[in-house]
Image (cartoon, rainbow, N blue to C red; front, side, top):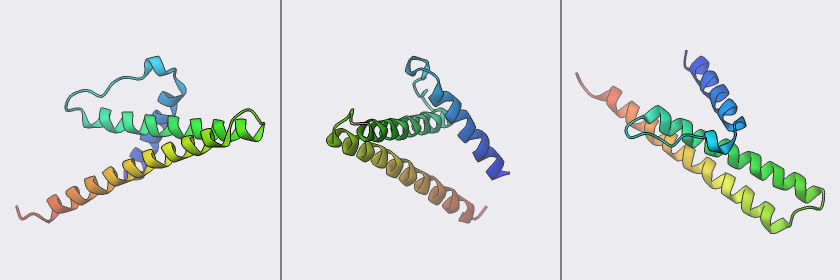
Length: 100
């Protein structure tokens, strides 16, 4: 069940990333799903930008420093999302260990 949910969430993020930036919504107060969706959208957009910069550099249309900056930004975003994921999993496991 979790893999189906993850696949649907990933597909939703891919569709949201394909929409213009003006359509991106801001995270709402305590809406955790919105925060996660926004973080994933930003991550995907950063990775796409890095890929575009690499392609542009290969074509001779971008400087190497721009490529390195875009890749570093995408890597930092990925590491942040992974760290948050690890903390959420850790919190869930801690809750599951609590006696009822």
